[in-house]
Length: 486
Image (tube, rainbow, N blue to C red):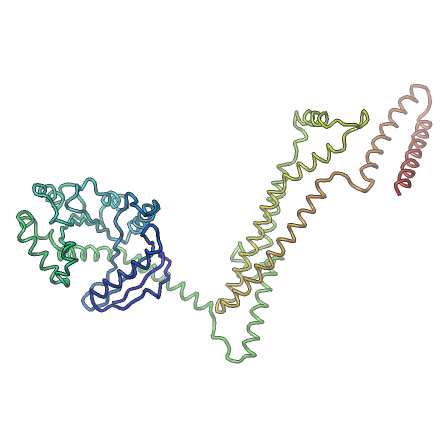
């Protein structure tokens, strides 16, 4: 047989620990060596890696046996408390798999009510269709306690749907001394133990011994295989279809000539650039883009921008609120300085704008990060589709794409900071604001002057002339101010 180590269930093997074994003694040494290598660097003395032993022989059944560690309830000296969680997680992972047959080992010298594995098995297998109880250590049962053990063995106490089987393994002393070498000797010793024991010899023979456990387990395994065979067939067919699609994606073998290979590589990179550009421009006529919405960069970007616009709109001040004017009045009073009566402190507007504009930054940063992630995901996915047979080219594209997105992101951050700087400053160098204010003032002055002139008996013509004169004075005053500033 062979021995290998599977890392954390991820499927990777540690080649340094792999070994070919030809006898039980070699297998024991290989397991001990692998166990020492896997746990020596762990302070808890535990490893989530699996030691996989494969035995091949004409007479052995096609069966996978998973020997799980015992349930840990407390950490000993030198162990981390995480070992409890690690062991429990591993046990629960295998128990929860519906195709797993649970051999619940119950020490015969312990009260069955205190054995945790039976409750765990009941939780994952409430119908009891895949759980067999296995009573161990019958040689350690105290005198006078045999009746309670027989009640469990006969499925009278803590009954299971598939019942129990009692087995007698080699003791620690026998293992240490090297006695009972080989499975035949151990089987013979077990049979003699049950025949000569004053209590167990009277028990149902079909419930005693490894051989009967094997028979029972084989029957259960056959029933489970028949039950899951249709489902297993469809799963295999699905895996086959996926493998077939993957093989088709690889295409034909690469050309032999250097010129043809260069032409093919250039064509593939051109296809990639075309797809990426079409995605960014919103042209989704290609099958890849039309069938996968998450690769449509323009659509995703537009959606992100609409969400950003809505989020910023929600943060605008409620000018119509009943207390808005009062809050502004209180802030103005708090900022009163050396300005003349009737004039406002200009820094009030600056603080108001800067405070509200800064509220947009988290939403804008979130939108920028979303667009970065979408662009990277779409670019990498398109590369995987264009270069299925050339993973090196796909990796090169992903690296270049990542570098470009990082540089672009840094440049965008600078532009965002500049926009925030300008948006938070309400003061402008152009005259639109002053012109608008003057227009409102002149309109009000014209109405007030017309009312006065009307009350005095003068016509509106005189009022308009006075207004035009006032505007001319204001214009000359503004020009003088601009000249002095120049």
